[in-house]
Image 1 (cartoon, rainbow, N blue to C red):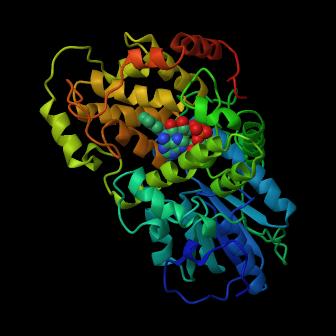
Image 2 (image 1 turned 135 degrees about the vertical axis):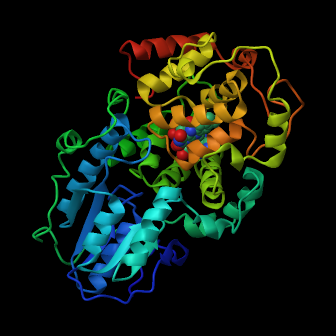
Length: 466
Ligand SMILES: Cc1cc2nc3c(=O)[nH]c(=O)nc-3n(C[C@H](O)[C@H](O)[C@H](O)COP(=O)(O)OP(=O)(O)OC[C@H]3O[C@@H](n4cnc5c(N)ncnc54)[C@H](O)[C@@H]3O)c2cc1C
């Protein structure tokens, strides 16, 4: 087969042993990497189609039953899909969008394909879907990783204890994996093929036809989905805020972060493209580049390692034994408020700082990263039990964050309860799990300014970074 520079062999795995079929096309089942640009799976599929002198068909299945997804998430995702479908059409590639459970839709189309290429996801549902297809498809199913810099099993064969243990393993592989993909065009156009599809370029029309949870308002005023918007934000971040990232990333009043997490979550931008653009940036503050790369690669890929190797990634049971033991020991510590989930959800605790963080998430679909730590720690402190706190944090995070339901979210919540961390001096409720206090916020930055900023956003102002 011809080689495409930039698609390392470690990204590619054959998921079944079915022989090459004599189908009418190569199928790329797009699931995690919802973009046209810098997409290893798409490029690999084009390469295969060209080698076999077949047209390429790209399929996306939209189910209205994706766990914990609601109107806010669907609207953002479909805006991205509309742009991707349009870009692929411009390249002569047919984009088939069907309302179906994705793995079943992919299997149906696999019936007339020579082979299927699929991108990679590390969450339980994503693995189950791919297994379903691989076990039933009458042709080869090839998985191509495009949403991490270093493929998870190449970086490490086991669950890593913390960033410190993963960092050296990833760092030594970066020169090999940090290479752009050379994009190619299909030799055969598939646009005229007779395959049933919805009009993927009509995001609002598709949205209207879905029977989904519509109880969470859209966040379009703050975030619109799509590859070009992600690229605009990346360019703006590099031009105006990257230089201050090391110094001010933990200050929610400064808004120096990239705000790229919703786009990364839906695969609307390639982490490789983000990393390469930031590494090439001409800013004198090289330390800011290093700190950003640490978050984007080491921290993000530690989260992927966590969900891949820890089957309990979405429950209290995933915590290290020392954390579970100490939280158990302190279960009945009295004092302090105890809130029900509804009180947290309505941003109605006694703490104006915590309420502001919750409100930022409710209104804009994205809470500042530093406030997420305080937010999770206080849910632990003010819930009736640590198990209930764990569930509350995950439910609220996944329901309201545009980047929720992501490995980073599962790892972030787990971190608040001791995962990827070490024991600290013992305290009520937390035991030896690290705690956070409102006084710490006041010391670090003007938390009252943050509270005002969130009020402004709730009453019509834009996010400072948009
Ligand atoms: C309780 C809690 C819940 C979280 N929930 C989510 C979630 O649902 N989805 C999500 O993507 N992130 C989550 N995070 C991690 C982090 O807060 C966000 O990734 C970050 O705030 C996103 O904003 P940004 O894109 O502006 O980040 P930037 O600071 O600009 O960072 C760039 C990218 O690096 C990655 N990154 C940054 N910080 C972290 C981190 N601590 N861990 C892993 N990757 C990181 C993200 O992909 C991010 O988009 C959570 C953290 C905590 C403590």
